[in-house]
Length: 421
Image (tube, rainbow, N blue to C red; front, side, top):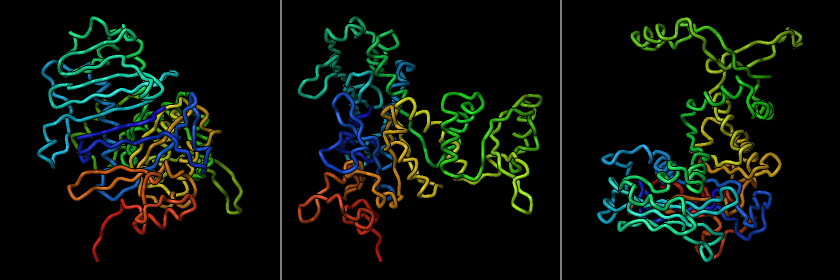
């Protein structure tokens, strides 16, 4: 489970800012909390903010940290790191980016982080323990070298083998270290998705439906609950048909595809609809092509259903930018409820997403500590804060019975566009 994530000197984030999923001592919506090893952690978090305020950059930061961790082992000595510092300050444009994440993995709590620039890992650290007061270091890396504790014996003797541009935890995991492998498993198990470009996830859902994998039945239940109009969905294998290629595809590319795929089987998703006579009686079923015959919103739900169900079943973390794009507010609400409710979310899965859908604020879906805002200051630096921590102009806190949607749109909590008349 994800507990905290901190980012600094990355894209629009200049100063360090922390997304904290530790539940605060407030009374509302206690079912939105998972109790894990006596620690209370939020099942979901929603991020609001104006366009270009940094919502997507927070999600990109989570994705970038994951990318650096998982690809580090493949780097050669001379390879450059994917480095995107805050460029609007002379103090930070050449300083290292900061990432740190606190999480539970296999009943153990870790705090792992690193700082890096274009050519090297400047600092790296791994601690374990239930709190900062009681945690102990497993290893600490600085520009002077790597110090390994007795509790991290798997790292002993590998300090000098670590290239400047490679993470120590990734190297030790590659060499068989058990603790290091657990760290990498956490990063593999959290998924960052785009709510706009969702076609990349069709294959995952298609394989699940075609092979009747675990999660297939739950996906079908989700479609039925959301009342998308079709009765069933099938992944059907068929011969490659060149006439099904898009009409506007370039002629040369079309020739190559026909050459490569002629005589081969392809798998497509077909939705199954009822067919009626003039009296409204069901007389047959009709198979329709998902991509050509279903709406953009229905296509998105089907594409994302695989990752959503897999996340719920495996107790993973799902991070989505623009979750509400192309979806009716009621459907977005139902997806959120899957994660906030203890019954379908039996394995402490988490959902973190960015949205502009203010309807969600008026439906008592979220606690005040689950609602987060991004806002840029005069120097175009992104600030990140929760509704729970926000102070009103008179110094008071936001009440739990406030009209959150109305007050947000009126600008009482900040994080909205400033549009002149």
